[in-house]
Image: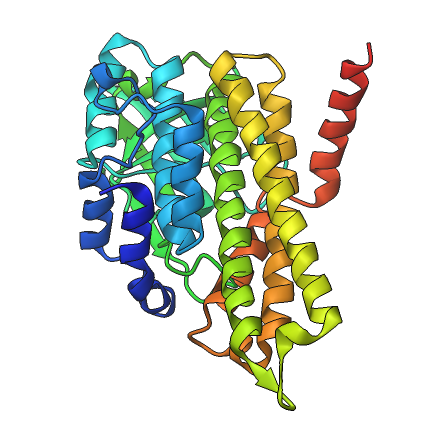
Amino acid sequence: MDHAAFAESARAGAAAWDAGAGLPAEVVRSVADAGFLAADLPVEHGGRGWSATEVGELCASLGGVCSALRALVTVQGMVAAAVLRWGDRGQRAAWLPALAGGDRLAAFAATETGAGTDLSAVDTEISATPGGLRVRGRKVWVTFGQSADVFLVLARSGGGLRTALVEADRPGVTVEPVTGQLGMRAARIANVRFDDVTIPAANAIAPPGYGLSHVAGTALDHGRFTVAWGCVGIAESCLDHTATHVGTRTQGGARLADHDAVRALLGRCLAEARAARAVCAHAAALRERGEPAAIAETVLAKYTASRAATAVSEHAVRLHGSAGIAPDSTVGRLHRDAVVMRIIEGPDEVAERHLGDHALRRRR
């Protein structure tokens, strides 16, 4: 089954997952069995060798139906990308096929109460201890933290920030489910405590000092890219739902689509969605060519697409009227998810500063 057909088959359950306990285990297994987890890993590591464009289209299809499905692909891909680039040969052999096949579900544990946008301020510690390494600290808002078999943890150490893989079943790991958040309600988000957790030294990914700039940087870049494409899916899905609604809904004997103001607003939504797709496609092309500008263009893609998803979904809710805020409203659910995507890396000004630097570099 291709990803568009898979996404369509998941559409009927999305509202219930959002309202209930989250993405069911059997759905997670079906994503893995379809080959969508870490699909961009090389075939020799268990992946499908997909291009950036193919992964982007996957995330757009899933994001337009259920942001938690897209988030599952995102977090698995983030950890896999970091291990592929910065893990040693043994770590790649031990972890990547399990991540690609869904035998191990991963989560990226970086954010803390005092370290959100500025991850250099994390307080979690990794230190040497007899038998390996000790991990101590607490992470918050870990996507799929309730389901993860392993966490890629960003922490402080004597030589600078570093990362390590911490299995969820090790003594001292406590998972605290988070529920009732604005959006992404099916993504099994959790806060996670690491109370003097001992792990093998072989679980450390890259040397101290490489944790944020290299390992986490690779993961975050992959995350931004897939989130951007998921936002394209949100915008396009809300546009399609709204075009259908205004084309069939009558008010005062006339279709909503017969009103000039409604058609103008729908046109604005089309422009927003098309622009977001174009920027994401450009970022994908740069990634496939290995262009140095790909990282900055991915920031631009996430910035542009998340703003488009928020705007289009908001217009969709308004044009649906009371149906747009009903508990089972697709556009209402996607709007809540879009708002979360807009703020996950902090206010717009954070991205805008990076993009301003990129604009200045381009003129030199």
